[in-house]
Image (cartoon, rainbow, N blue to C red; front, side, top):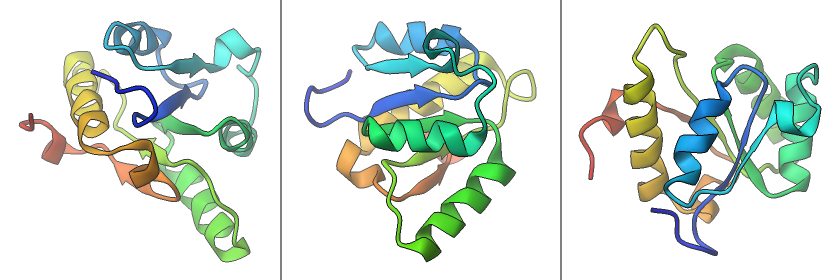
Amino acid sequence: MAIAGLSALLHFDHNVDPQFADDLRHHDYDVTVAKDLGMERASDEEHLNWATDHGRVVFTYDAGDYRRIAARWFLEGRTHAGIIISVAPPRIGYGVVLRRLLALLDEFSADDLVNRVVWLDDSFTNRG
């Protein structure tokens, strides 16, 4: 369950199924979705800029681009609220991704995620 003032605020880029947002909202997480913001065609950098401006952690399946952007931002001395990267369904099940994401969000506060790129791997499967 989300804890007001401690839990990360999330932003899902255009690659993530909006159903994840609905499922996380049932656990009291605050989630924005690219489509709801008219950002379906925004670049990854635009998503990260928007999320940063709004104190939100990006959740994405686009590992390559976001890791490159995060590395460049680090070298430029820029900060972001965090980036969470996962393998996309159907390569792994929807429920697996959801359980891993909930486990990660239970473990890390919003402050813990600042300037971090976290790979949502199977280390988050059996937690909690």
